[in-house]
Image (cartoon, rainbow over all chains, first blue to last red; front, side, top):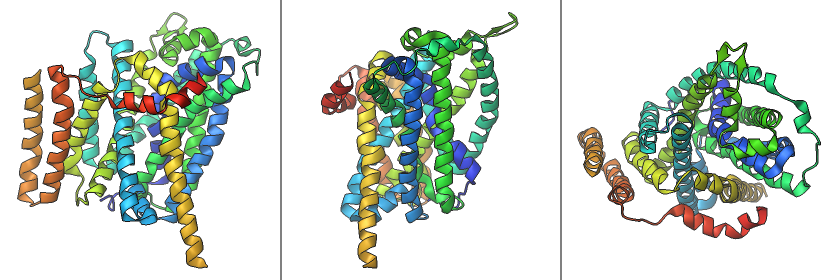
Length: 364
Length: 71
């Protein structure tokens, strides 16, 4: 299905970063800060460390089964019946998280930017654009993603300007929060890092599957750096109380920039890069779900089912939450367990263990 | 609203089905309709204002003991 499409290592790294980052910078700083208070940055560092292990787990699976997608190697490891069951669960998770992302984006656009437009408009439009991207193929998605790398440079510049407002004393006293709170704060960033597992649905597109370890390490480290800078920035500008009370603190942080009362309203630059990043994130999850479905039914081409899956994603995204508060509560209290335990470590770890045992038996 | 939705479904069918029939992709056609019907089942009741069960509520209920731990 994906045989003809190939992307290089740099594109893969950027793609993984973009698979995790866009929604993370929206809602993650506020959630982490509300749990781990002033020491939320320690949570980000810890999450990066554990995230690297997640990345290693996924990459060792990909390396042991070169040229196979997640769905194909789970079938090979667990056999036809259990492989399909794991596949069904994974497809559900992909579709659910995709509608979660679509909703998050719609909520962001309607609450922060365009409050008078009904949210359904954003949900439908973002799904249609992503459907078009998915239909055009994986290479197109990866190349379009390069555009985001350029925007990222602008993003860093704007972010650097916003650091003129920081007060380092807001980070003091350090290590004041209880260790348990810091650990609890690690869970939410970790559930985002674990999304790296989605990339294993596309592993055949890699030019050289030996380099997958470097790709995942590099991208997790860069994502961790972003988490860290995002959280530290919010902490040093707003402090833990105000920062956690805001819905989108990073956005407000950039909104506050006023350089010589001339350079102002830079928030729309950030907004632009987030919207583009968001489409790519939706596109990647959407694509993985479509690949899963076409593997499930043994289809020769995935394109015909793109629209039906998209309709399910939009319908679910309307259904799953009553509002943004509801969703943030879900993302904070349920989502980490749901996705980390079952999909981001549980299933990959099970696959890895069974494949190791099988290997042992073969060699013995 | 409901008309708009039905129009959307009709548009998707018109866009995809002729190509599949021409290339004799019957398997794809079957899966296409299965997923389209699921999509209809999820979207039409919502437009008509009929309550359908919310999957996140079930997930929240399953993980309640664990999420109570971190509160």
